[in-house]
Structure formats: C-alpha cells, structure tokens
Image 1 (spheres, helix red, strand yellow):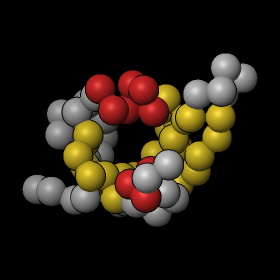
Image 2 (cartoon, rainbow, N blue to C red; image 1 turned 135 degrees about the vertical axis):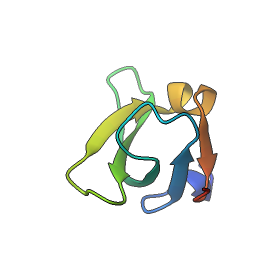
Image 3 (cartoon, helix red, strand yellow; image 1 turned 60 degrees about the vertical axis):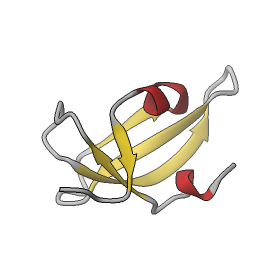
Length: 68
C-alpha cells in the first residue's frame, strides 16, 4: 500500500459535493469483502467524517494534498 493512503495524509475534494473541501484520512478498515475503506475527516470540522471505499475514492474527484 502506498503512503498516499496512510492515516493523516491530506486530500482535496475537487467537486465540492460535501460541506468541506479539505480532508485527512482518519482511519482505514477492510470490508467483509476485503476491500479497503478510508475514513475521511474534514480539516475544519473534525466531527464531519465519512467512510468511502478506496475503489470509489480513486474514481472520484479527489487529489492528493491540499489545493485551493
């Protein structure tokens, strides 16, 4: 697994479909099917969290690092 999916890595959601744009990976787990899931935490509000499957995350509009 590459370091880009490590806990604490920074990501920007390019299409703002949620309340925030900048996130960090706060957790990782594997589903019952063995697929990696990432817990995303908003930088500006740590209570804003959600889980996303890595396969969906890779296809979605996310970029590594923080961008404006």
